[in-house]
Length: 173
Image 1: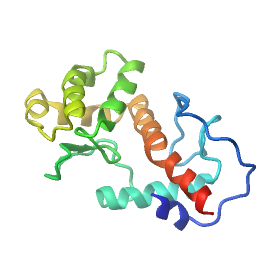
Image 2: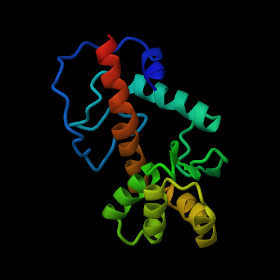
Image 3: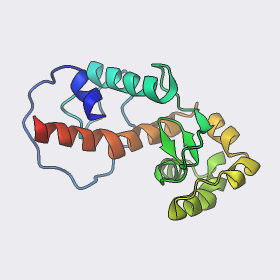
Image 4: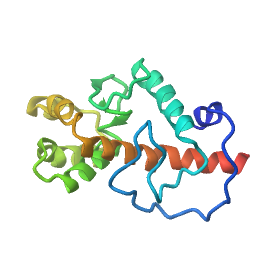
């Protein structure tokens, strides 16, 4: 992601702020076509740079510049299902997305998968049999049109990828 950020062109000069300790993001995460929400920790990117960066990542993740919120595939890479914007069921980031979404929308279809997602993340297991049998891929795809679900995916991208990449970019200049 750092290379993608750097490839987006020069960023505007901003005053450096002390790093925040994994502060929660606003519930309405920025979309690919708008600047980050107030309080966002991504001041080094313009809205255009952010959109380009997200499109480049999407090309490498899904073969298209369109963000694929409903993507679900078992790649056989030892990380279980790869879903949405590159999260996986074995590493815990898919669990983080679903947990955030369900906290906002407790009746969401994906709520039923939290125990299995938690088990897979805790054991770092690539096993998808339980999720497949219970209809996880279909539930994920159905959720993809929900703005709160998309915001949960966008927030996890910011928290787990974008903020660390920008911090690294600041350190290396």
